[in-house]
Image 1 (tube, helix red, strand yellow):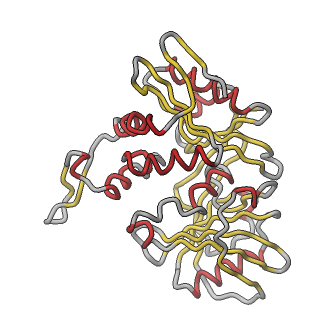
Image 2: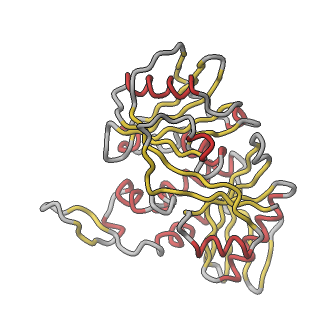
Length: 318
């Protein structure tokens, strides 16, 4: 990785010494820090008055929960460096003024070899541009990709300026977990290495990229946080009518009988695998399942499937 220098701004690989600056960069984007008072009402507080998990919750909507505290930020950055993901900082006058985070992945067509950008933040358009140039250099022969809400026209226009075009739309559905007929096997599978899914599809749950979700969900980076460890997360290897799949079923934050499904497999989602996931989830006590899929995959769903307001667009370079 080569550093990129603009006028008095240096773009380089992030180190653990940068964690405080990166955390400050993300925390500046939180409009209100709140907690629940004794009367059950929301109260505004200073961020340092909150514990690690309470601060974590403030970053969920912008997918930056680990960057709400130095403790979790250090865990994440250490992991990213070990797994050869991309973490860049823009430094100006000894201060961190920009950050980029991206995940390399090798997926089955139509995605192929990509570098997926999860975070790109900076104090000015010039800093964003400098970080993007370095991401392009890091990508090499890989396509750059990114995701935005289908309702976010500003981000869509931004991606267009940097040569990304909309490639696919992803929608979210809810399905009832139910007992089903079919032969399948589901066993716990905790091997954390991302190379297990090289060349695979991610037919369910792919709101970012297959590798991005894997790094977030499978290795259990956040098990040191008791509230996260208590939230049920099942990492399973399924075999259903000849189809192999790795499936993560994660309990929802505030509705214990709801769960979101993430699935990696060499093949698209099949009806037997869908029946197996719904049956296994029902037996575990879940009643509603969340599936994020393409319109093509949604054709497998039964009439009880309901769409949610959430839609995502996948962008990539040509």
